[in-house]
Amino acid sequence: MTHIDITKDDQKVFDRLKSTGRITHGLKKLMVNQWNICCVCDTEIPKGRPAFAGYDANTNPIFVGACCANHLIEFATPTYWGVTHTLNVGIADSTQIWRYMDFAKFVAMLSQKGLYLARADRLEDPFEGASGLARREGEWDAFYLNFFRAAVASPPFGSSVADLSPEYIESEAVRLLGP
Image (cartoon, rainbow, N blue to C red; front, side, top):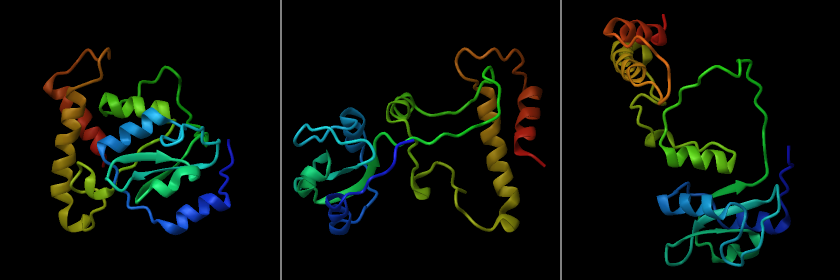
């Protein structure tokens, strides 16, 4: 695991600009393509040092190190290249894990070796971060039961699920919903 190293120059950027969290498609694409290279001076951003993603004075996306952070007018998010964390999960290597995401997000996750976490108000699930479980339990259960039915009915490409009868789909959706 690489250590995060915040230098005085990095701290000046954090002190000057606060993260807005506004990440457009263009900025995401630039972050993936640049990886750990400052887009202004083409120098490599050292492992463990932050890269600063944001926008210049013309609202163009930029991805820079502290070396060129003076070009940042809006600071969207920092990224720490080379920082890895290990998650030990006790499942067999042969176990299929289903996770539905578009291909571009999957490739970005692999190339960045990290996860993108969206703001709660940007998620497709209308109940994400909601309160009032006791009052809306039936509504929540109906939403998730439909979601699980759709997920079970559309297994990943290459999966060898033999039985997709309505009874099987319903029993798996109910099982996923839980008690």
